[in-house]
Length: 187
Image (cartoon, rainbow, N blue to C red):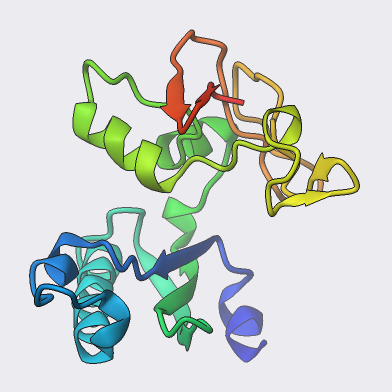
């Protein structure tokens, strides 16, 4: 609270979650080993990636100049570390409008032809579900609805919401992705 009192409310909340399938981890496992057999390796690779993220944010200023930050590292029940960061940006770099949000956040499936590596990364790590009518037994379903409010409605522009959570641009651009036996779009 003292940091927020002095510098203002945080502008960004960033989470870095360890992924046991990171190449740097899988390449170091012996045949028959799993990542859970090597907490030393998991922790070391996570720390290296965290250090790189910190360098990108606070030395290279990829999201803007930072005047204050707080971060914590936690370990999940499965033993995988993750970090949460609160970042307060310099007044000149604060997020001022919806177009600024769109430059920082994309909630759309990338074009598989133009960006094949990004497309695959999004397919493997970023798509929620499928849930709802496509998969009513998904872990996120509560009382017949997705607890994360998916699928979202299509939306042509990002709009700030009164509660502080933006509604991100999710255009109906015809780009889809197959997750298991389901086809999903930007919703």
